[in-house]
Image 1 (cartoon, rainbow, N blue to C red):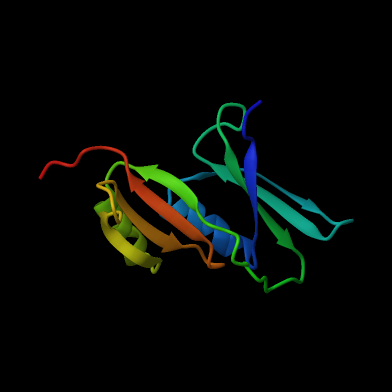
Image 2: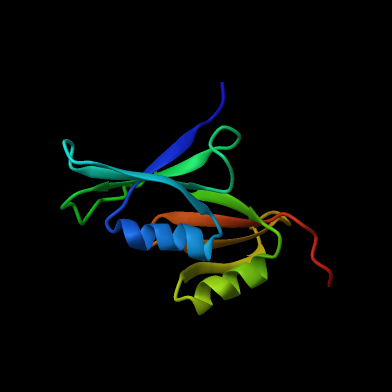
Amino acid sequence: MRLLHTMLRVKNLDQSISFYCDRLGMSLLRKKDYPGGEFTLAFVGYGNEADTAVLELTYNWGKDNYVLGDAYGHIAIGVDDIYATCDGIKAQGGNVTREPGPMKHGTTVIAFVEDPDGYKVELIQTKKLDD
């Protein structure tokens, strides 16, 4: 067994694809309309679906608002340079909700950003940066 994907419902599919691909460096792997069900699925990720888990972005036609709920936490993405990543996201108009820095009660450097629908994405520094 392995994790295949995580599904997020989105209000604007183009904005969400742009966020995950242009700001976070994922690739659009596939996209398909389902007219009978009035929805579109787009799969984005960092590699082939056969090898790695991806995100499924679901756009329900005509639905432009969702309640995120208080049970949802976040998606976590490892990055080589968290400071440059956050600077790039901000330069493209993205929302960094927690600037890079050590996590409370630990030393791991993290930051949080929000996607266009308000979903939290945690960025985690994966490589040691030269001081």
